[in-house]
Amino acid sequence: MRVVIADHPLITHKLTVLRDKHTPPPTFRLLVEELMMLLGYEATRDVRVEAVQIETPVAPTAGVRLSQPAPLIVPILRAGLGMLDGMVKMLPTAEVGFLGMKRDEQTLQPETYAERLPDDLSGRQCFVLDPMLATGGSLAAAVEFLFARGAEEVTAVCILGTPEGISALRDQVGDRSATLVLGALDQGLDEHAYIVPGLGDAGDRLYGTVG
Ligand SMILES: O=P(O)(O)OC[C@H]1O[C@H](OP(=O)(O)OP(=O)(O)O)[C@H](O)[C@@H]1O
Ligand SMILES: O=c1cc[nH]c(=O)[nH]1
Ligand SMILES: [Mg+2]
Image (cartoon, rainbow, N blue to C red):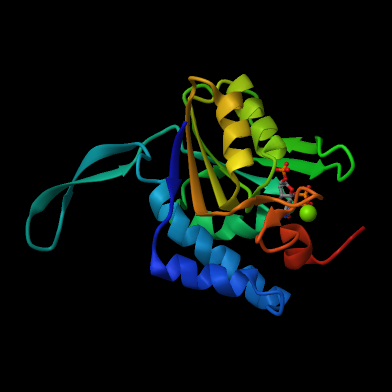
């Protein structure tokens, strides 16, 4: 599995405001979308394109357009939903599938409570969105779901990750084709398996605490 950790002052600047516990939900939501667009540039580096001929007002020229089948974007509910608009702006012709997952805070095991994906993902490039890669359990389960449906390549985009999460995802992926793009690699996990220094519970900061 290829791991790309963004190293850009604008990303670090936006991440600093995102992490700040005083940042209110409206600003937090805006920053998650903006960070997704910046990370999307890196995540789509190998998006499949095909050659096209066009004419500018001055001369004919060669260009590219996104290939078919269109890429599939899969936000992991809830928190991944905050990244969806940013990614759709980068890939307007992509299709969108949904996975709803909740980590059991006692066992730390992910529970899948919703799924709306094509049955057959053969030959598809898939982009999975979740701001937080903590133990890696949720993202590993999501990526396995997509490979089990035939996905050829999976790119996961997370705003923050940990060494533990990378290692769990790498074990799950094995020798299949996957890339992980991170906004930052944090120190690790606290005793509740929260990312340190992290930003707290991303879903709660986006949408409020629902218990
Ligand atoms: O790497 P892991 O240890 O599995 O933890 C990360 C998961 O936890 C968070 O979701 P959460 O379960 O809080 O659901 P939510 O998005 O509804 O808040 C986060 O968005 C990831 O999906
Ligand atoms: O730090 C963490 C860990 C899991 N889920 C979150 O939203 N934040
Ligand atoms: Mg949460």
